[in-house]
Length: 29
Picture 1 (cartoon, helix red, strand yellow):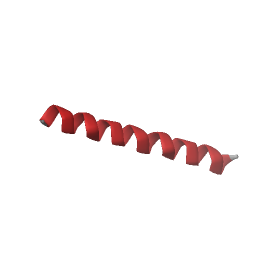
Picture 2 (cartoon, helix red, strand yellow):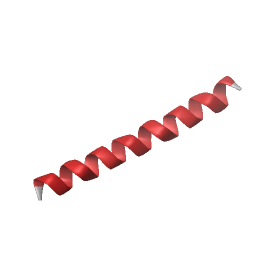
Picture 3 (cartoon, helix red, strand yellow):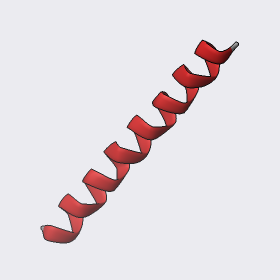
């Protein structure tokens, strides 16, 4: 259960980071 939760959190954080980078790139352009 703990392993799954950790994996879930990592996946969410990666998604947020990716979307943030896309937004930053669009803002710069």
